[in-house]
Image 1 (cartoon, rainbow, N blue to C red):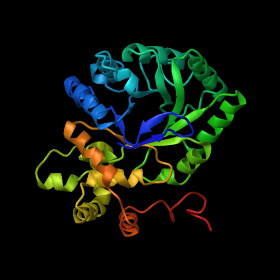
Image 2 (tube, rainbow, N blue to C red):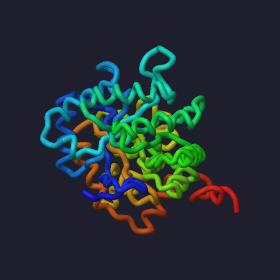
Image 3 (cartoon, helix red, strand yellow):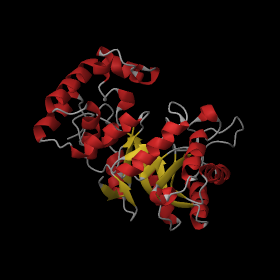
Length: 328
C-alpha cells in the first residue's frame, strides 16, 4: 500500500480508502467485518462512513456495525483513520438534520456511541447547509475539537466557493478549518476539475473521490452483461448514464483489455494519477471487489493512454481548471 498525508495535515492515510455505504445494506455484517479485516491486511487505513448509512438496520446502522467490529479489539481502532459524516435527515423532526450547532453536537455524540469510540478522526459535513451561518457551524465544530471528540473537519459535495467561504470563516475564528473535500469524481464525472479541485489544492485540502467506478459503469459492466452476471450499475441512479455513454464504455472496456488490466483498476489508477487526489474511496460489496481495487496501485499510464481516455470521456469544456476550460 502507498500512503500520503491528508491535505496540509500531518495525518497519514492510505492511497485507497474504504467506503462503507454497502455495509449492513447490501453486504452482511459478517462479510463487512471480514472486509474491514482484509482492508487492514492490505494496508488500507482510511475508513469512511456516515450516520445515514445502513438505514435498513435502523438509524446509524453502518456506524453501529463498524462499532461492533472495532469492539473486537486487536488494535483496530488505533490502526484506523475513521471518518464519518453529519447533515443527513435522522428523523422527521425538523432539528434532526442539517448543520445547526444543535444538530452537529447531538449527531456527533450519537455517532460516537454507535461507533464505540472516544473520537472521530475526520468529521465531515455531508452537504453544504445554505440556511446555517458559518459562524454557527464553526462554533460547534470548534467545541467538538476542543473536547477531543473530533480531530479534523472535512466537507463533502461542496462547490469551490463553498470551500473558500468555509476556510475564510474558520480562519476568522483562528481554527484550522477544513482538511478534506469528498466529491463525486471519476472518468464519467469530471465537473470538479473546473473549480473544486483547484480550490482544494490552493487551500490545502485532500481530495477524496466517491463513486470512483460510477456505480459500476467503469468496472466492466458490458462484460458482465455478456456473461449474464448481475449488473447493479443499471439501477435507476446510473441507468441514464449507461444508456447515454454505452458506446464510450464499450470502447473503454476494449482499451482495458488491450492494456491487460481490469476496468476497475484502470478507473482507480486514473484517479490516483490526477492532480490533487489523495485517495479514491472504494465501496466494495464483496471481498473480490475489495481485493481487485488494490491492482490500481500498480497500473501506470503513458501519455498516449491518457489521451485515449480523454477522448472517450472528455473533460468539461476544453479541460483543466476554470476559467481556461471555457475562456481564453
